[in-house]
Amino acid sequence: MPNPAHVAPERGPKLEPYQVLLRPLVTEKGTHQSQHKRAFPFEVNQWATKEQIKAAVLAMFPGVRVEKVRTQNRQGKQRRYRFRMGKLANWKKAIITLHPDSAPIEFF
Image 1 (cartoon, rainbow, N blue to C red):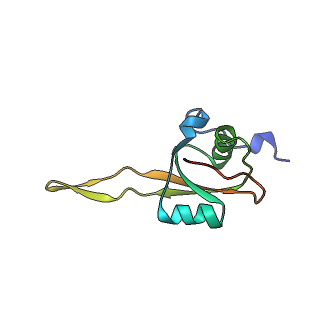
Image 2: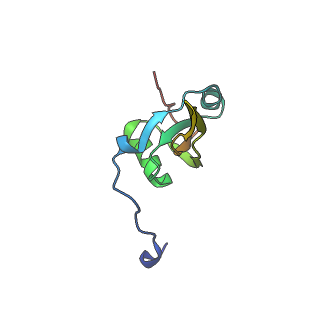
Image 3: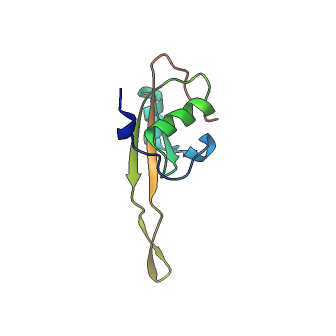
């Protein structure tokens, strides 16, 4: 049991579940992972922690049991805008793995 003095304070603003999960990442790789490994990729808020992401999935998709959450901070790509080089924004990706007996997440 962790000592309350050693628990890290919440960082950033308080986020609602609909503010944590921004959008599902519907890609070829993500579709394959969702069908074969029960792993669903989402773009999430950069301030969101793994615990907040898990709570948001449980709140937004009833009947789902989350086994684990993996996160990645992705660097924005460089893009050319007319004669200058620009940069897309950095973003955070979360891969949510469900329990084998859990209901799948339905997007459509």
